[in-house]
Length: 312
Image (cartoon, rainbow, N blue to C red):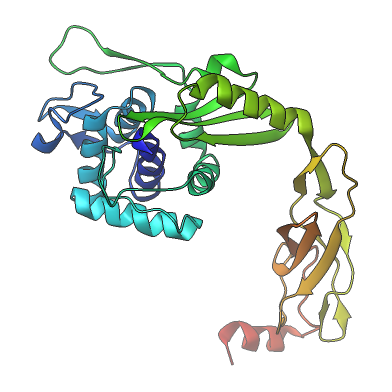
């Protein structure tokens, strides 16, 4: 997957690191082969500035500096990458470096890259970085700053283009994870070993928008009946809306299942999560929370409430 690896690098760094941390570039990061933002050992930038160098200019040196800062070492950071990838559900991937230079035990699938990217795009800072076309960051010891120009042409080729990362090695070929947001729908496209990666990805994204639409199948705030604490029925409502991508020629007939949390007991606070709702539609399953709309103390008097609060 070449430098599309850096999607995992960036979201791992944002998960375990502080973007405002000042990073001192280690000697291991200077002169790393391949794409570079020309870091020098001892130079200082924030973690966020390095992430821009990582994602816009694909700096392999930035990848190493980030990894050592966040993970303590390359191996330590790769452990974090693999643990997080597994949590995301990318179970057919293994990361042995943070930059994507060829290694036999460094691999993924198009499906796993899509899962990783879908997860990463939920992070506002990640999404802002990969949607940036041009960024200036400091260049210590020079009279000018580094100007980073995003290599991802999807930002210009596709209406709503908003990410995410290119990649190339001679063994991996040309790779691209791309994304676009339009009419309330976020799409992600992955092509691996694809010589015409930009036009192919643009065509796939546009086809996705042509064939699908987002449909709201559950509205936040809709009342929910049947949630009891003892003999008392609570006033409850859905805490989230659920939107699903539906093909434009498909009929929407969602199946909604309400599940009350077991062993609910007073006192119940307003806004407390008291259950969940499962929505199944066209083979897709989504969940939302059910929230209490009222306070309920079980009709206790003052002394009973005090004993309950004290845990007696």
